[in-house]
Image (cartoon, rainbow, N blue to C red; front, side, top):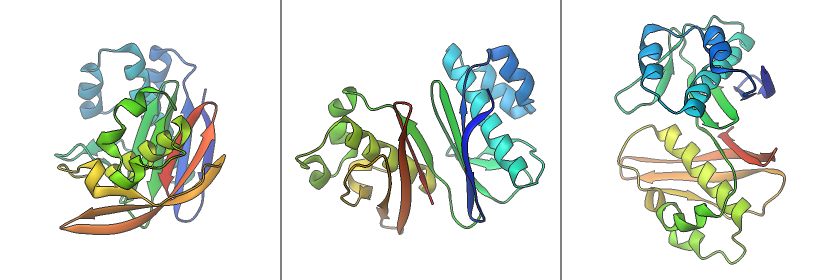
Length: 210
């Protein structure tokens, strides 16, 4: 199935691909370059292989929505992806059966997809600040929004040595079907706030910076 949901404006474009194809079909559509093929061949789990392909297909459609040619991607030493022959910042995420991507013209990009589930409570102390962890109305959906927001912030920053519970924070918010929240990255060498949009769709949380 091609892209099932997207938004295209003068600042950013995001797209979500819902996987219904076989791996063979996705591979034929993706047209991986040499570096991408090497990375793909190292993936063993069938769903992860399809997520990898669908994420690049979502990104390919984003680039084409911008009326540009997609030349593939490459990654830096920290694993942050970049478009070849295109200066726009990008980010990708996947959680089967969805894969998503975003391209930003004016700032770094971050996107994340996750399904609300009880297991997030077991690791909440690793990604919530002390204040966030003490919120009385914290449920699976709200916890998942925090997780997705912080993953998006981490991808925006794009460097290692980030402690989620110390360096990333999200201002308090009330859960809605979709909303805008403010997230902050605060390290000694980098301090910046970002607006993040989230929405709940088909049982998953999708979150990215706007």
